Length: 113
Length: 112
View 1 (cartoon, chains in turn yellow, green):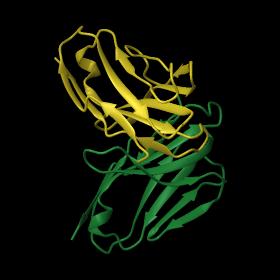
View 2 (cartoon, one colour):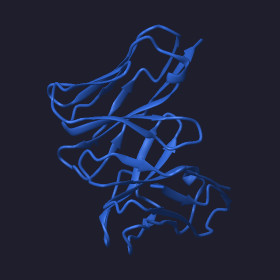
View 3 (cartoon, rainbow over the protein chains, first blue to last red):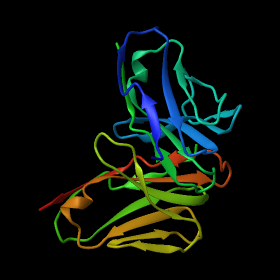
View 4 (cartoon, chains in turn blue, red):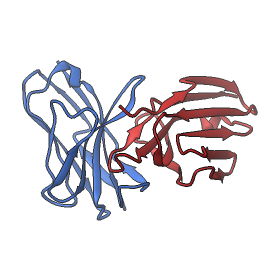
């Protein structure tokens, strides 16, 4: 089954404790992206990647890191999480960057205390 | 900062009524997409519009892309309770086609 998977689905952590949210897709998509969703703000793009070893900042990259060592995986790293990073996070992949349908993962609900 | 402004933010109507949701920007977009999101899930694509003035229909849903490719609308005819959800427009600005920007969303509730 074609899908985007994220882990964990739920995470409660404390300020400053490094964490990684994994994202994997099995559709051989070139483009992958991370978003955060907050009430009233829609989805905001954090980072995106157009191919292996090619990543770029979205609109809200501060406090986040990503890597794209393999085509299928695009982990999101929070080196020192803070309470303002409490949010619902989505990973998405697309076969192309311009106008391509994005397939979203199930989301990761992160709470930073 | 390129923005996509959606209106209305919330809409609650009776089953059978018609409604229109708007997505506006001051920037030109190479394409615009509409997604629908249900609680606890990621957004799912409804349609992509690419050409200025383009109109696409998906059963009772009609999507239009503005002539200048700065705005789009979603019209639902004879709304049904199953249409309830969060509707999001998204697009890639022509000036930065690799980025994707989402509108803030329209939360639609259809009362039986």
